[in-house]
Amino acid sequence: MIKTLKVVMIVFAVVEIIFGLLIIFSPDKLASMAGVSEVTGYLKYIMALLGICLITPSIFLIMAAWDPVRHINWVRFAILWFLLATIAAVYSVAKSYVTFSHAGTLLIVHAVFAVVLFALYPRRAKPSSK
Image 1 (cartoon, rainbow, N blue to C red):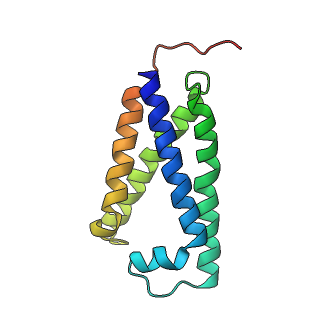
Image 2: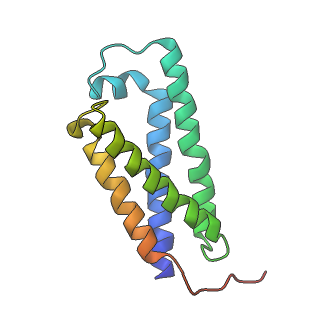
C-alpha cells in the first residue's frame, strides 16, 4: 500500500508541475481553452504566481513520496489540497462562476485523488528513525 501511495503522490506532483508550467508559459492558450478571449498583463502575472504555487509544493511532494511515512504531513497536505480544490470547484459551479463543463474535469480529478490518498493513508505505520 505504501508503494501505491508513493506512485500516486509522484503522479499527482508531476501533473501539477506540468500544469503549473503551462499556466506560467502559456496563459493565453489556457485562457482561450477556458473561453476567455483576452488575458491582461496583470492577470498573466497572477497566473504565473498560481503556477509557482502549484510547482513548489509539488516538488516537495515528490521528495516526500520517497518515504511518505516519515513525511506524513506532506501526505496530509496533499489530501487537504485535493479536498479544498474539490470544495472550491463545487462552490464555483454552485455560484455560477464557472459551468460544470469548465470545472468538472478538475473537480472529478481532485475528488478522486483526495479519496485515493485518504484510502492509502498509512494510519498505523510508524515513522522510520534515521
